[in-house]
Image (cartoon, rainbow, N blue to C red; front, side, top):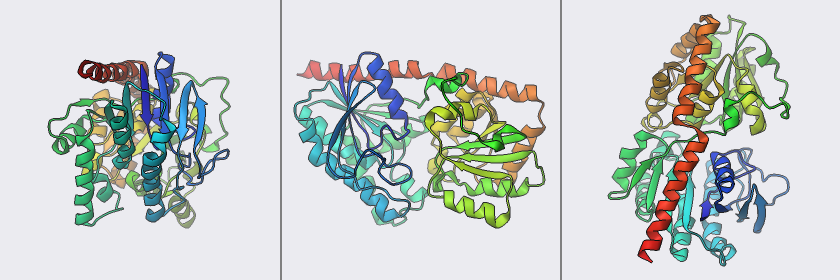
Length: 412
């Protein structure tokens, strides 16, 4: 089976699609990837790449075709919009040329925000006369208004119109959260929709490899570390961490440790200095292969989202990573993500953006006997293996890919 994966983000950027592609190749699938130049999250093109020009390389047995891209920059809605638009335009212009002699059985889109990035894949699927699968990771246009990037009702309606057309040209829609099924179906009447959750590489559920040298993070080595890992952005409502740290600053053994960067990281650093928060540490971003070991040193793992209806339907990928790591989870969010944590009995959930409730939950976990905390972590890992095992989910994806490929063969 030959599969074309279309994703603006790909290795060396740290996204779920990397592990999916690697595993597909290991299972005998021939994979090509159409992507852009790596620049996430810092906003500058990675060393060894340049924004202009096309590039072809090999990674983990897959052939990677890279189109020119306008870097997203450190911050700013205009640069971000140009970054998204540049991939759509260059994907439409250069994608067909780069892949002109390549033949596929199916086209697969990793549908991170914005879903508009599926447009080049629609064109390529039409040229190649193949079926198109889109794995929906985020809901548009809801995410635009929830994160504050767009509030104008006319613009939101225009985006909704485009999303409807994208879904109309898709043959199968996979959704990462069961709560996505209804809103996606409303914009894609008559289209098949299947629940297909995220997972993480199996190393998150294993003891740290001796081959991986973990960075020294003093805040992890003593006391009770509440670790947040991932994007530090508006959607994560990181203000709740700052306020909880203020409320708990008189409990010196409790400390918040934030691994990652994003649009709100500088603001958090300013708050640490302005408020004298010695219990909030921002060591920054580290290689993905070090995260399992760092997470497993935590007293608890924290996931936060803003108090918006769209985020109540979302399951952040870090929920699966936290479950795999086998540490208690603190879920400061509403809806589907909180439901999963409760169903797995993997930790404590509090309402989104409620700093007092979060501080109380942190204190509750800190005061809990170590055996009870260990049981919460074990519950999460067991739930992960039962519902989010990486290999099982890759096999499920392959079944979807084969089904779409056979549909083409039957109608040829």
